Length: 461
Image (cartoon, rainbow, N blue to C red; front, side, top):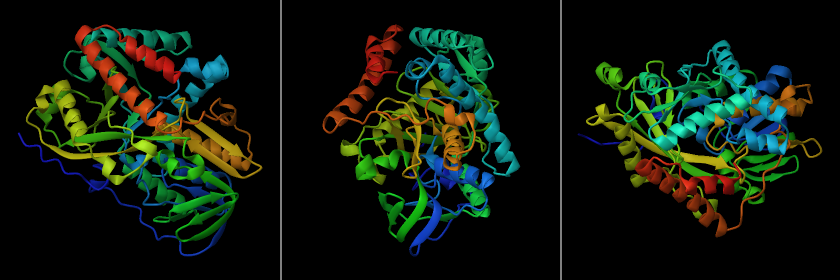
């Protein structure tokens, strides 16, 4: 068995021979525009797209410190799902039952809406809406599956949103070991994330948006940005920086950058796929607390990731944090445990990247017309479709157009700030360790973990 994984500068997705990188010149002087967007990931790109669709004459510029899709938008697990990080109970407690239901329906609808736009714009990102199967592999996870579906029924969502699977039904989709049941939702598509980012960037550029790569924003002022290439003045400024938000002093405690890591196999032969399943390219995970996620890629690999990497003191972000040998080894072990036919398969890639977590695990879209400043983020790793909805919402806010999206409960709300250090470092890493211990306890006993229940209450989920 060979394990000669190569650490790509960014990810498997960026090493894809079918990817056509975007590529643009950095800003070369001062600039005056109607809308300035910080960050060339999904949130910034979709915001620009929907602005141009509604008001083509707007001058819009996007400023990216590295390259299009450099952050989570280009390195993620490739799920375009309707998952929203905050629970329905939490959303309703801070707004209303009706508002929580409207938000989830908007998330569900976003999958079809995005698929339609990608087809219309001829953005090839290996889109396949095969749904998402989440496996229950011990008694505690089976109880969670049953409670999850029952919970959705209480909110008025049926099988069109999520269905409970028997062991046989779950294994038919994802033939992992020790499967006792699970859940399935059709509201998820597998994608090649870097191809989505680069393809969308080319579309917005054709619409007249200027994208400046390697143009780091060093300071954000009122209707003004300082960048490494010049000063930018704008009527509206949108911050779309997600896991890199803490690099700006005034937003240092707004979003915690947490690292999620991934591995990928070589392309697998037909006989192995017949044993594993995922015939519809379903995305997959199980019901453990410390989240794992995977997909069958268009070229026949398994791309698989999970949490477990440490939070770094003072919300530091470094390229060196993309590699955690112990965590990458753990991911390979978990995947082989899930699918024994992978025992002698070579893993060819390993990588990582940061994602943004607000203190209450609740994403937000905010806009202040008085200052012209807006932002969206805090997606907690569920950002592909959430950024799509956010971009459409920010465009409606800037243009002040009638839109039901502006009435959704995540709009114009602010999460509490994270604690100062060292409390932040202690708390975040303690939560990670508590979830890991909970999963170990449940694997041994099959009983739901009291530790995990306490942690979820602490988070306010």
